[in-house]
Image (cartoon, rainbow, N blue to C red; front, side, top):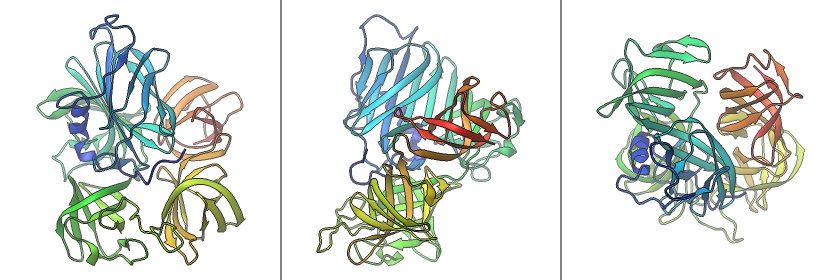
Length: 461
């Protein structure tokens, strides 16, 4: 399940509202959907779903990323389907209300996402992120009558925004004295909101704002990694420097790490308006803090495209399947996409931003490795991202449970974009199966199944 080149960028979070509108068909020409039997349903009794698909492993990313083509989106259990067009868009008409599963297939992707409690006459717009072979909904907006719903991460809070307001998935959200805040069954307040939290907002439209009646905190994992790839403009140099990529403001300082093209050392001196860079960092209030910047070769893709005398990519970044592991942690020797990769105690391992250990590396996984090219072509890994897990492989993830549903012992919920299911053999620690609620912080150990979900052997709170 390898992805072509290094499609690390998806959407500009600050422009998600604009893109959501574009997905709805205003000013765009999305691929015409197949909607079963024409005339068999009407807009008053069915749901219209439109969306944009992008590829990458970050939770937030920029619109400068490449779209995904060759993918078909189908409503499971129906004849409704549509191809993703060259702009990464799709439209599904006459979708029945209720709980709906969307299956994304093609171009190395085979994954299903669930939209719950869809209502007749709603228009639903989603942003879908594809990483490896897995699809996940990054932002969602529902419009029906006077009420709108919005789901995404908190991107700005006061004092960057006005008192009592926040930005969610690029949309301005206002609160009032009657707005309720909850997390699971617990009552919360505006003061409990933090940057990076995933929230579900219900409210009504007032101009360009969404006036909220209810804000539900779904995920308290506030560490939000961001990858932005694009062309620099509005560069301001200095000890604390900044520039823009599209609408995204990037800032850095003397702690920012630098990497150049090929074997060339990187530095702030390589920055200029018009230069293409890849930025990896963290979402801050109103900007991205750059932890690492890779300056790409002119006219290259995200990896720089340079090669050494032996024909190997010298960009210090590879993506592919883990086919061999030897040695003892932390000094492991891996084979990834045919390249030798070495690890040390300083190597970090992550799965969708969640820090893992070297012990979580298993044969068959799809990895994205960032490091320094060594003489002879080996790669000394600084960071290893687990993009996809092999079917039947051990799996571990930590985060907040979202969308908990089902009846014990058979529950289903999400953790950091992964679908988790339990059965009679699942062991619950720190609470019973029946006491698990959306928003609970959990650590899940289990096994990756063929449909992409995780069968939990243990759920610890």
